[in-house]
Length: 108
Length: 120
Picture 1 (spheres, one colour):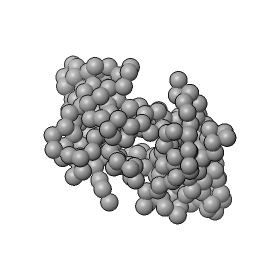
Picture 2: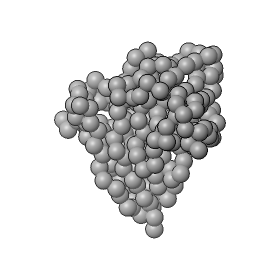
Picture 3: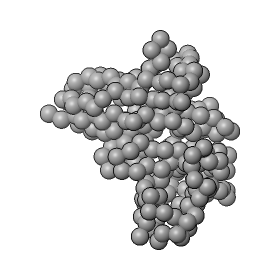
């Protein structure tokens, strides 16, 4: 089965830049999306189509792609950005949807 | 405004059946796929399956095929997730989400989640 691989954790100090990676063999052919989930809350879409931000998502959130790896970048990290982040992709039909294992972002 | 409102928390015993719901509003229910996602306690998100309310086309993750039934009722703009015989390992938060498409599929809007606890 197809998998997306994320690091379990990333730590940064306030004001620094956080980068969260997601690796998958199909990512050169599929756009990835990113979700933020805070404790006790439902996930929220922060990036879709690899680089697009939904309305209401701060500009400090951005996405990029290079081959089999996609990256969520949070510039000027704030304490409120501490959360779990998940990447996701799907085939074109859609026949399947897949999530990465999630990355816990800690703001020191 | 797109809204997905899920049914309330459930406490069930092993072997019991259960059907939880996800009521959609603010968009044309029949023209968007709805996904169900499981989150076990302290764990990540796992895709279970999707349903297209327009024609009830349904696709399942291999991990959940035969374990649950996903359906939708156009008359009530509601999607459902059903178990015929619950197990303790079904204890989890379950989310529904509406899929969006822009050169790739993504989960655009999420319900608030339904907590299912299975315990004897």
